[in-house]
Amino acid sequence: KNHMRLDSRKLLVPSLALGATFAPDLEGRYFFVGSGGGGGGGYGIALETVEESAYYYLLGLLNSQLTTYVLKQVSTPFRGGYLALNKQYIEQLPIRTIDFNDPADVARHDRMVSLVTQMLDLHSRLAAEGVPHEKAALQRRIDMTDRQIDRLVYELYELTPEEIEVVEGATV
Image (cartoon, rainbow, N blue to C red):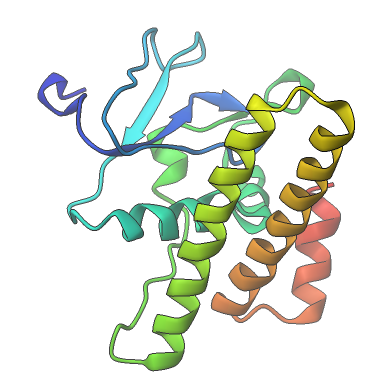
């Protein structure tokens, strides 16, 4: 709601979606119009840090199957499988912080940032590609990268194989 912060770095999220659907706006170029409450619009998540990597790390967590699973547990469901992605639900998401004094944690952070950067590049290339078999190849790489991000999220949150099965069974 703070108009002075609209052109700052943020992650964008629509007010209604089928699951976790967060997008980066690290140049502060995009704004939502509309109510943000059931009639369109959405929200921006600005971090207090200036580190771009923090946005990529958070983006990886937020767009994971685990986050979609949690949102389905806490959010208001709508017809067609849509979920409300309002502040009250996003605030309930457990965000795994990184201990930058732990080399293993730093390595996981760096891996997430790398995978998310790769994912954004692949999506950009997919949008620009016109050749059907090249689009299909890019989509396969996107799907593979998405699975790698999900596996890393499961590792970060120390999920058991049984818990992973529940998450993946519920988000299909």
